[in-house]
Image (cartoon, rainbow over all chains, first blue to last red; front, side, top):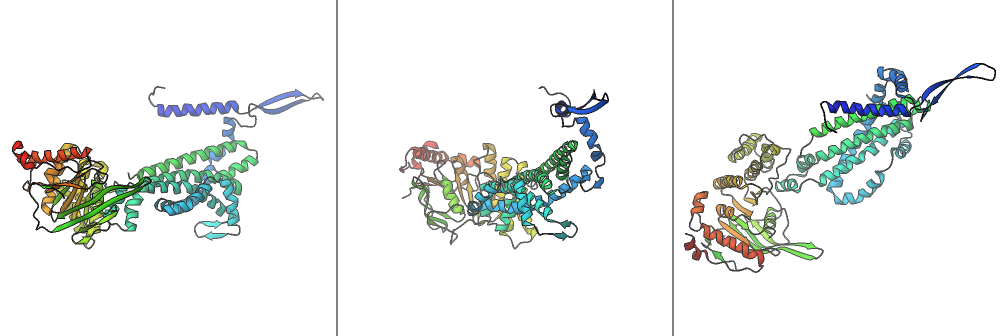
Amino acid sequence: MKSFKFDYIILPFVGIALCIAIWAIIAGKPITKVSIDDFGDKVTKTVRVGLSEDLPSPTEAWAASKLYVTQPLAKRGELDQGMLRFTWLSLKLVVQGYAIALLIGTPIGFMLGLSPAFAKMFDPIIQILRPVSPLAWLPLGMVLFLSAKFTVPGMGEYTASDLAAIFTIAVCSMWPTVLNTAVGVRAVPQDFLNVAKVLKLSRSKTLFKVLLPATLPYMFTGFRLSLGIAWLVIVAAEMLTGRPGVGGFLWQQYNALSYSHIILCILTIGVVGYVLDRLMSVVERRFKTI
Amino acid sequence: MNEIIAMPPPRTRRNYLELSQLNKTYHTPKGPAVIVNDFNLDIAEGEFVTLIGHSGCGKSTVLSMVAGLSDATSGGMVLAGKEVTGPGPDRGIVFQSPSLLPWLTARENVMLGVEQVFYTATKGERLQIAEYYLSVVGLADSMDKRPAELSQGMRQRVGIARAFALSPKMLLLDEPFGMLDSLTRYELQGVLLDLWRRQRITALMVTHDVDEALYLSDRIVCMTDGPEAEVGDIVEVPFARPRDRVSVMEHPEYYALRECLIEFLEIHAHHKKRIALPKPASTTSAAA
């Protein structure tokens, strides 16, 4: 298609409009049927018809979700809060798990990249653990922290389900950081290593002045992918633990048959994920060294 | 025996770098591959020696063994009375690609080495050393630029400054101008010669550019083709120093020597056995 003025603004809106139109077509619509029953009384009955009769239409979804969007910081109950509040609760957990993933994953990546023996030793385990779903890790986390309960000053109380969620996020989101860092370390140009050798840089100087800067772009690609996964995992973790948050709210609303809120949650998760990815790519560009 | 043409070297000079019976063998699935065999060379202090030969003949392998970046399979190297075992900043290296760290500015790239060598000096003194060499190579205004902001020629200037700033015992140049266009190459050969003239650092260069070799060196070592490359012939370059390009090219022996080297390279492109070169004395009159 030929490009035209402001197409970068107009076309996305056209795309969104199309998707909403399809949604509206599939969604069920309430129809009021009036019939006369055996006793001669007029009975009005509302039924939903459509391709997927229980799917709320866009207008219904908006009407039901308005409260959560227009009062994003409201707190009416543990699992009845404004969307921003839920997002904040979820993000808080994600950040903790993600931070642990980076702190553990980066050194592991460096060791994998630097030591062939270490790589041979742990690569099979990593390859086996990497595809395991967060749904599988969470119960293990629950078992691990079964009796754990402690308070961190300034951070609040941690229960088994908090720790299990953090554990799951950390374990699942670690792999892209580990693997990208390892690839980055292996891809450091021999020229740079020769410079370090010729100048007889000490081990720590070689690490911090040559290896680390040369690996940074790869590391940040890993960090970005990891953040994406961490955000993906939070929903599963909250669903299983019933913690308040976007994912927990989603699951609770599904059980409460208020389907409109499911769509609201999906959109919120998507938007937050997108914003996180954008932020990370800004940081990534900032640290582009090569 | 190596045939020595032109002026015989004065036997009185002290050997500064001695390479004896260097051998480099790689073990491949098809059996050992001998890259360099029985390579012997002595270089005097303050001498500029060039290794010349076809690409892939093993001349860069010899250089990287001297640099300590690759281990010799057998044989020994002695630099200034000490055996060379590994890499170290006592040998300044100018690589073919400038190999600057792209996240550091020109000044920081030079400083990285200066900090290693002059670790007892104050920060200010080290900065002075780095900035001195950068300005000598003509980068006084570009010290804060990163390699990406510099042209290929300027990057190689930084590379030269970095090598000289170490005040090394020896300078190793691995086709330092191979990636540059000919104008920039001439310019940088001038920069190199100028710096070398000030310090008289013993230098070993690898090139396949005959003119470059003649312009810069005191002696040119022709290597036979690999595998199993060794010293073919050694050519003494008689041009008086300080040199400038015009007077070098107008020197009566210039074209004879050039012919001689090119002939050597041509012969060894096809034959592995060493063939005696014609004496340039016989061709001097024709060229003059």
